[in-house]
Image (tube, rainbow, N blue to C red; front, side, top):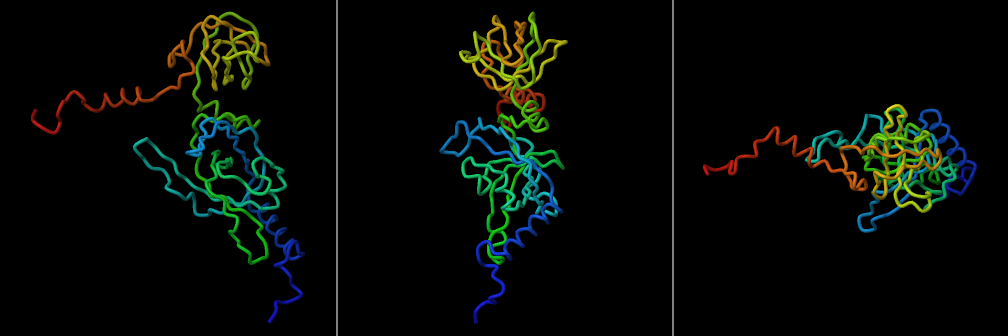
Length: 290
């Protein structure tokens, strides 16, 4: 026997389907929460490992999502591993398919569906979650078409990525956690502005030594720089691109060498020093009599 001819919810863009979709959107707007969606920009992708340590997040888009995880965070939770404290909290967000398309994202196929690797800022816990997997058939086809996406996300581990979203709460994550160097400045004029590009040389276009201002204290004249490229010289002024501030350098931060500020900082020395204070490494053979 054929299906009821008066209800055609398995067709395309039928009134029944539109009603179900509208109800889905309304329910998420009622019981959901506004989050920021941050699309990832790959700058130097490792095609073998599928990773990019220099990835950047250059925009943030507000959209309502439903927290599908109702019994607290999922995943492995918090535990101590050989690399220290690991936080593997997971959460699942649901977004209406039509509302997602209304965002108007067009890069790398995002006009139709979110992407793994992108971030979601969860304002309740003030944390970033990275999308691990996107389920586009969570409701399947009982109502004729797909109305939503489920996004399985895990707590994001920051590793020197660049944030330029224009949302200060999010951009501050980079300024707080990225590798940076403090420069004590000497004579000069002007005030650097947070987020501007600074350089050494005749012009920004020709400069091979650049950095981004993390903070500037006009009283102590301490300039904090991050996202540095090249080796800063102690005999050349650091110039702000937008502020035109220009100061000579008195000294670098003690954590790095003045001859090479592009070198990454390593924590093995700190770990070794802490271990030496706990474990006695003078014993040559702790398991024998010799």
